[in-house]
Amino acid sequence: MKKLLTVLLGLMMILSLSACKKQEEPQVDPEPAPTDDVVVMNYGEYAAAELGSKVVIEAYVQAAQSYWNGAKLYLQDKDGAYFVYCDGKGEDINLSEEDYGKLVPSVDYSAGWTGLCDGTKVRVEGVKSEWSGEVEIAEATVTILEGEKWVAEAEDVTALLGSDELADHMNKKVKFSGLTVAASKDAEGNDVAFLYNWDGSGAEGSNNDLYFNVTNGEAPFTFVVESYLCYEGSEVYEAVKALNVGDTVDLEGFLYWYNGANPHITSVTVR
Image (cartoon, rainbow, N blue to C red; front, top):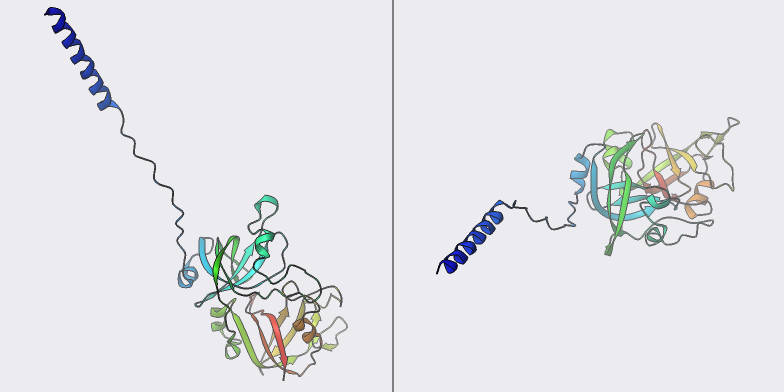
């Protein structure tokens, strides 16, 4: 009997110690489940975001400059437009050349190449930045979203030339109607319809940007054919080379900004 009582008391002590040990063990909260949720901004939220802040948007690729360690993209949705820098080098490239090739009609950058695109939808994560007045998304990572595509219609902003309101349409696909080609001065001081490079320092055959002045009857405005968007030999490049001072023209392009409106022109029609 004494032996049985001793055994029972021993078992009770073991159970009691085990219970105390369990009560003393710290309670650890379970690890939160991983999530891939990304808060995508609409254009209004993006426009209201502070410069330097992280932004995430989804929009449609309207055009792209040629690839070199990334690319520069012209994006738009139904509410606004974006200019995107996908940059980096080596393993830090934020847009692979393979994925870039899914956005443009061709990666054969021979004479006549243009970067006009068919409106593939993408998600962009980056930093809202500004350079010489151009508001853009820098340090951008681009993810292609399969399926949906959309190409914007060019919006006529002729009446806004010279106004502060024009900046509200920055980076959109736009058009200008009935402008007059104004003279530029070449290196010798001659009146010419366009310049190779902004200062006339370029030359034919070098795939330089083309700069030309137009007026709506008041002050002249400088427009450009960005050669990495529309290469030498493309339809718009050759059309600008054929301009004459005094021509009346209709223009289309993207409302890029460089210390003021500096549209990247993709179409020229002489009336």
